[in-house]
Length: 220
Image 1 (cartoon, rainbow, N blue to C red):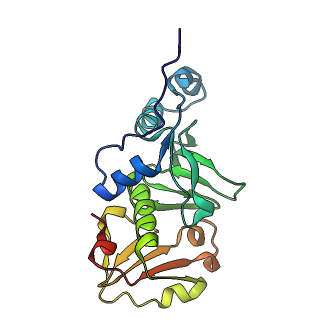
Image 2 (cartoon, rainbow, N blue to C red; image 1 turned 45 degrees about the vertical axis):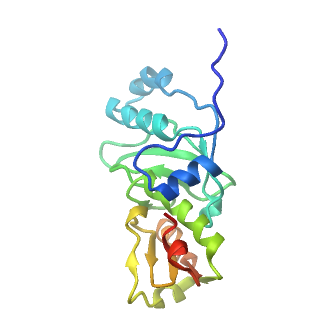
């Protein structure tokens, strides 16, 4: 039987902003994704709860096979979103792989016990409250980079001295460890995940996109 051809043009999952939907459908690529249902019996035999396999299957159905442009931090992020065998235990909770790294790294991209998208190194660092937040952050970074007149990068302890008075959090990125902030003519992305996940304060980084007009600030 012939294998159905998968269109390389992705259809954005529901629940994204128009900006992120355009980003996924214009700049993303969909590749064939592997079904994890064929592993269910073997995983259950190895002690993985059925509920965690259901979570992994739901993630794969929604995001599996989606390749997005490189992220501006985290060594460009996952190469292709997709899951594998859940990791963890009943005592500590369960994490689901979110996609293979593009390069060899000291941490992996995971979906946390409460659905957070984050990195797991020496400790867990939930970046966004869901995969939607990660995708929204990528879309916003791509948009801001295209329209900003200036881009400034700050790293290390200097990040903590940033003055965010007059800025408001960008709600759609669902920020936890990482956050975005919108001012009157600029956007600021704060990347704290590596500092938390690897216990490395020197890995703090902020990207400041300046000189933005109303379209540049929102993009939708």
